[in-house]
Length: 228
Length: 228
DNA sequence: GTTCTATACGAACGGCGTTCGTGTCAAGCC
DNA sequence: GGCTTGACACGAACGCCGTTCGTATAGAAC
Image 1 (cartoon, protein in one colour):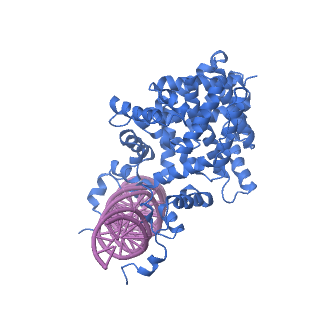
Image 2: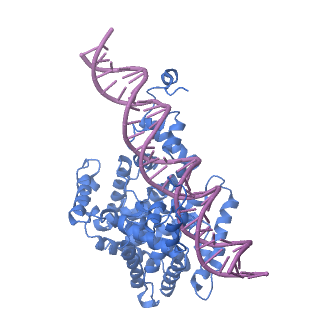
Image 3: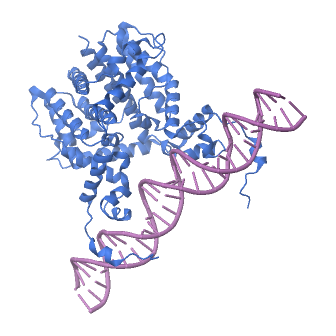
């Protein structure tokens, strides 16, 4: 039983690992099998190497996740030229982009929750957002707050959507999920939870797009109301 | 070396475990050492028993966490009689309560993020919130959305605050954290990130209370703007 | 050709959530 | 009062996880 590694196998694939390649592999795993399947072991296996090798390029898993998120933020098109007349629409445009891009990457949005992204791409995004809001004439205090709240909203919705659109993403599964939720609310004791029973339908509304746009509208109007 | 358990030790403390007691112990651990210290092992050890014993009362760790969150929501005072004239203030009151209560329980707010609480206490909270918003004359569609967004905001702020107010919660630690953040933004290349550099101060503003109230105001005004 | 440094990698460590099998006790029944 | 039974306590183990250690090696520097 050889406890020593075989030199032959090693020679075939040395010096091939890279930070970029590791992030690639990680993202591929998340896309295909979700965040929970992302393991230093699965990443290493995808790359045909051992787990320990990853640590030469990445400090820890948290670090890797940060890189993945930064990469995905980089996929967002934030190429927006601030226009004072259209700031509200431009804010919405940026948030739609975030939601759409993260929506394409499984439940990665979940990992973005309790994290302050400070990479190059994230900073460019923030910079753009601030530019748009400043062009809109909002006070800087309002802007500083909006920079937290707006992405929080977009990510929350993206994650919520990823909950039932996964793998066997048949429309039937989706309907089943929404339906069970709705009937749960509907069948609550009506004397103690009259409002919840009444709103059961709306609380589990099917059209995600409409819901998202609706929330966006609320947020933007709230910000606009703070302009004076 | 006895591999058999000693009957004496067992007799002293049989039949003492309970769901409530387990939740108590878990919450105590979170309060004292944070969410990461919450382990089936630490809970069992606190109760002077083995980990396997917990599974007679709790399905899995996720289940336990849900119970803990439900318990803490129960600590919130949602005893609000909806008043059409004061709905905005009442919404704020409820959110202040959530933030304050979760703020008293370490970083538990982090666990509440990607979770839809459906326990008795959570439902009572939602019911109250809907009652207040309906009294305020908001359309049901707006209300259904607000029921997601408002608690999300309160929890996000509660978690953010727990990040730097922990254990050695000296004011110096806090200032150090905020300060390093601020100087990070301030020292970004000014030609590429002019807005971020300019807003470095506001983005890392110290007075959490003011910030929280500010966001609350934005949200409530946005909701009010959707009344017509 | 030798030395040095970066990195690939097998193996192991400690810790996690969870399960298994066994043991034990209290209550119900005759 | 003895016997059965079922709920629960619990030690041990399983299969994961993130991470570290020691060693081997390839290519650059000299």
